[in-house]
Length: 322
Image 1 (cartoon, rainbow, N blue to C red):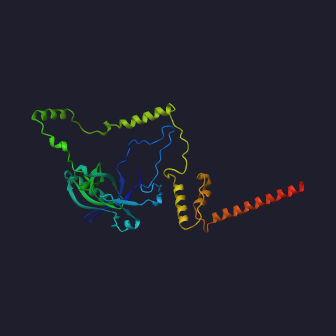
Image 2: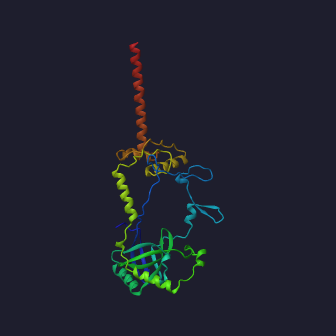
Image 3: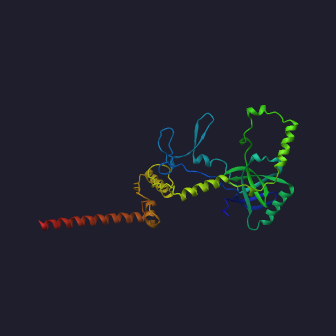
């Protein structure tokens, strides 16, 4: 079972039910990467400013809100801190409504609720009460710092919290051709009803499979067996998106040093592997007052002295030979 993404409590009346929140679904959609047809190399995209055409680093990217007339308002971190705090860990029940009053079109992301240790009895009370009353609990909950409307319902003995769209997020079905739709005749309706009855049955999820995903997997296996694989060369540095965490950290450190007027560490040709842990730590550590940096300086001075000594020895040997 995955780790709980949220912990809080359901409160209704004087009853408080500590719970954990888990995502109830996962996306198994097939996704393809964009690659170069010739060698299979992945296509990367630069973050380029539309005004000056320059590539923008992560540190210089901010949030922006575009108005209806096309103006762009830059939102800073200080602006976000002034917004109302929505970090509550409470699922507050507003009311219990009949299940048929909730349009399925309004339902969005589902989550499973698991009771915390010792809260099983209160959890069962809420679950059984929802089932016996055939109602959903209309609640408010803060997820990812934003207040949401949601419902609590029961599925296979588990309470499900399902977030809802706000009413203004549902588009109205105003289509021109709907005005030309008439009504079916009595004979047409009778024939359609007979067809529905002939295809009537119960829903069994085991009867349906994702044929597209299976076909893609079979095609990939066939290409692998036939040797149709592109051995893409290593990507070159300097272009595209930063995907290595150490590289992103190094860039951030370098930018911070540059802003303070400190010398920037020269970028190595390649990031160290797991066997060079000490070298990696030295590259990421600040230089001022740092022992690894001091060791590097001492090593450089020692190497310089050795080089000078060798040169002096060569000169002496040359004089003796002459």
